[in-house]
Each structure stands twice: as structure tokens, then as C-alpha cells.
Amino acid sequence: MFRSRRMHSQRRSRGSRSRHGRELRSSVAGPYLPQLTGRIPRFFQVVTETVGFLQAVAPDLMEDVSVTVAGMPPADASGQDAMGQDAAGLWGLDRTLKRVVIYRVPVERMARMSLSNPADQPMFREYVERVVMSGVNELLDGRLEDRLDPGGWGR
Image (cartoon, rainbow, N blue to C red; front, side, top):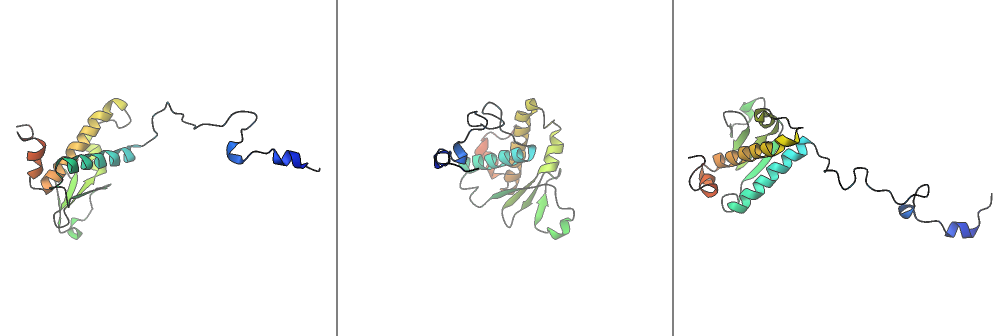
């Protein structure tokens, strides 16, 4: 069948085309639903925001400090001769590189909270923040403690 030029010139581009006479389609989730994230991206987000806070509070102390996240502590610590760990295994320290490694799975297990329960999210966030701050404070030999709370943590 022969198409006329008039029909071809009236076609719209793909981006503005509506289907079956309907308007343009919107997002499946819609603007009223919360952002779809999982527990791992949320964990990274809390760690990143906590490090940003610490850099704003004590920029001179946090100048060379880096904080990274790993799933689990290394199985064999002999290869990590400069790496120290806290007693619970929540973080590892590399004093030569001034690096704190937060271990995500042990932190989630020690929190003993349901990560799928929205009511537990603020408490879990606070727990992760405390772990990050404690690890950085340990790396800095307690100098961060005086900046955050001049009276001392819980004294």
C-alpha cells in the first residue's frame, strides 16, 4: 500500500508520541513513593554522610583520613600486617595509609535490628554513625573525641 507524504509528515518523534491515544507515560514508581534503595546503598550513604560531617567538624584532623567499606574482614590477617581491628571486628585500621575500613556485614549483624522495618531505620543510622565515628576516633588516637564532645562521650 502506498503512503502519502501528508501522513508521513504528520508523524511525531518517538519521544513525544503517546500510545493508544493516551498522554505521555510517567515513571512506574510515581513521585509519591519513596526512592527504591536497598540496605547496601543505604549503608554506603550513611557512611558517606558521616564522613562528610566529620570533615566539616574537624577538617584539619580528617585531611588525610580515608574511610572505605568492605563486606567482611579479611579471613587471613597475616597478609594485612599493618591492619589492626577493633575487638568486635566492625572496622579495621591501616595507620600507615590513615585508612579506616568499615565492615558492613558485622555492623549489620551487631546492630540486631530488622533492616526492612522502617521504624528501625533511624536507630540503625545512628548505630552506623557511631561505628564510623569510633573507628575514625581510634585511628586519630582519640583526638576526634574532643572535637565532637568536649565533655567526653558519655562521661
